[in-house]
Image 1 (cartoon, one colour):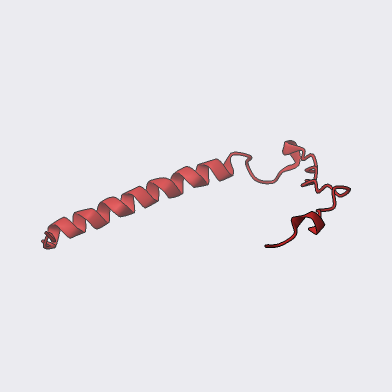
Image 2: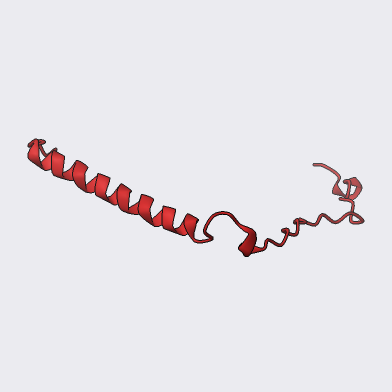
Length: 69
């Protein structure tokens, strides 16, 4: 059996803090792009993706894909 009385102890004098950077304030009036452009692009791409899935399912039903049982 190991003698745990002489086991090394962790250094309690050091504490680690997860620090973060403060973001630089941005004046939205000086932006060249619309501030909602990312939101609009997200919804348009989501609608395109759903339409693509619908067309794939429609094509699969027209082609008579066999159902695996």
